[in-house]
Image (cartoon, rainbow, N blue to C red):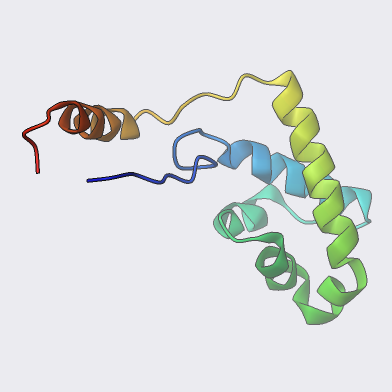
Length: 107
């Protein structure tokens, strides 16, 4: 093994609830009453997929860019005032990868 690549956001750090809140606030700021429960299953998609899934193509064309900018600003504000915690399950996997990397005889 020569390397390992991880996507941190939502994989190694638990940010899903922050993204839900940031999107919820972004939709509210632009006049859309979207319940958090509607946003939850969309988390993990990029904003280019999330917005049309929730608002449809016409809504995405009209407000998509502003929503994505608002989401980013809201997420940054949340992250700056909140301690983002690591996800607990990957710790064992990371430990195994690290220990394997440290042993020169491992293949």
